[in-house]
Length: 262
Image 1 (tube, rainbow, N blue to C red):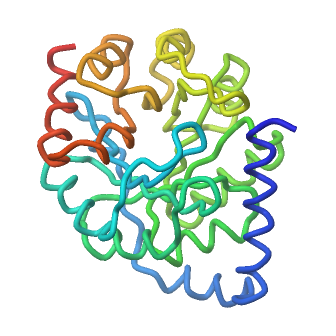
Image 2: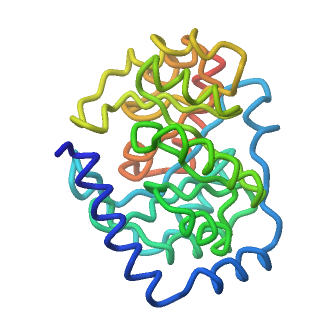
């Protein structure tokens, strides 16, 4: 079993606990009553390098990253620094995240918010919208073609934008085949957790102008941000470097300005 398979198994087990507490019909009702989702696409398509700043306490590869007692305060710092969107980890076993973190961030910022999780069941999409998510993550490596297409369509029907994450040429092709407008390239192989920042540049040309391109993982400094900007990134998703920085507001600005230098 790969690391990704193990994470997915835990996600499904935790999902069953939540489903037993709040039935699908109730989650659907809450999702439909939630305020309309915000679109990040205009910001991502604008000139320069957009930053998706992440609220991230832990990771499977690095363990504990930062103590974040007030995710809403961190999110406000990100927004003040110019973040185009805020990503919130909600997976609890490996990332120490929660839907409560998502609630706290959504209530405190005006920019779009991404629910960062391993989306494996329709329930999670209604759940994401019920908790105010504007974007959701679809990891191509975790989904067969049928579920990838169905989940991408469901996200759109709920008004959310899907960030479709890829790591290989085949996964890029699968993402584009379902009509993804926002394609992430994860420099981390989720099956081994190894990182190669060159992965983004190797796949960006395959995406071309068919979708907005997001570089994910391994962006630990301004030089890394400039490198992926040179490679064609429209946006970057940064977590570790921001939560470990003493001034996250300034750090977001530095990362965004790297696009101009790139």
